[in-house]
Length: 179
Image 1 (cartoon, one colour):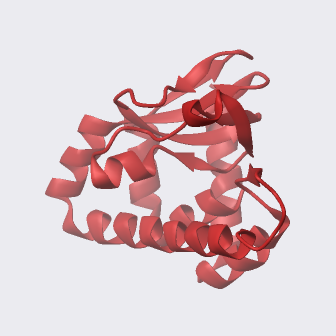
Image 2 (image 1 turned 180 degrees about the vertical axis):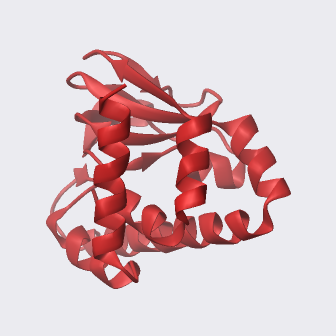
């Protein structure tokens, strides 16, 4: 859950309300491909429940990692406008909040303070992810878990008010799971 906490810790309650009002709560079944490597993305995704598999065509479609609840997907393609470098497929039924790329881009263009908070959060967790990847270079593994146990400690350092971020995530889940 650490990556979403970084975002929720940076954004205001009003920002989160905007995400809920403009995002779409979607249940996807096991086997559904959420992101296809090399295909354009039309949304930013927050994983609210479930587990997904990450695979790369260059390795013959081999699974290289898992995505767990609280991960944010599509942020790299959103930031740099490049096509996704991996495919992401649901292992089990998942609950996803999809925020349309076009609406998010418009919001970032119109609301400077939202833009500042959003990009600060994205920068923090992309930096954290890169540090984790570099740390794992020395390990004898070719498998990534996008939410490793060390992430919780890192999130605590990246999020100024972790209790507030956690309560926001619980509130977000209650609102979205209840609808």
